[in-house]
Length: 384
Image 1 (cartoon, helix red, strand yellow):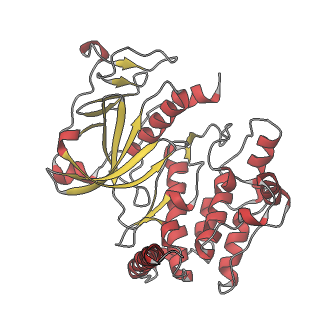
Image 2: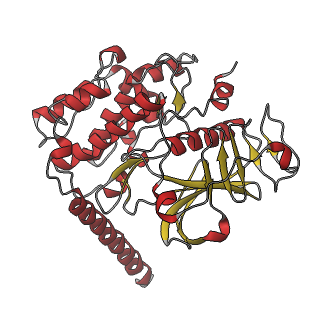
């Protein structure tokens, strides 16, 4: 059976009670999961067969049912939210799977990030929706964005998540990252990834700075679980994710046109690479230094791993080096990374990451204003 089908048929088993801040503080209604027999217009996604009516509910093989008033999961979790409750504000970005907007939930005045995904007869997109909904509704952890609900209208899936007002960490490059701030950022990443692995048996598979969000309170959280995979004896057998952050063993598997088998260690490599990028303010294998993408990937597989820039301690350098060992079986585990002196007492340190975040956001706004002013100045110059 193809790996995509396996992903699509993942279980929604829930080992821990579901707790959602919005439900607790806003008294969102929880509804009994609807039966497909009571919804004549349900679209059943099974072996690519769909009902013709695009305005009904969306049924992921009984694992989850999305409809205009919310989503009901097979494990009993249910979230009620709909478009009428939301006021559209700013567009936050666009990605391969759709658009993300900031919205205001009018009944509670809570700002949310709403992802819109237009459905197509694309099995990989359906798999990604199911996977992300599965992870988000079960992954209740301080280092993972909170899930507020999802709904389905007019051939589009919408899901609402916690709005992180400073955006992704890659948007904050430019002011430099002190070592204690770097430790707090990557410590949050590793704790979130360890939770996914230990509690939900899930690997992220797409670790990169754009999937690490920050808010002005100084909180750091993981997002984007559309390509996450269920662990099967600690192994996953599909190559999905951003290639430039792939571990060497994943790149080698793709270059041989093989389905690479990799462990959680592949995500550990991506954590190390992301750590260097955050510290450096730029991707460690800059494309402009290579003649083509193949040369860049060969450098990742066969060249020496990158290191943190000057100014970081030997302890921090050693931590990153343990992430970037070429042999996956020799890389540090999440537990070992958290016990390393670089992160050992990171959670108890007095780190003012909120002030750093505010400063980084202000610097970015200032730079954008300078660019706009320069552009206007050029446009105003008389032509000769």
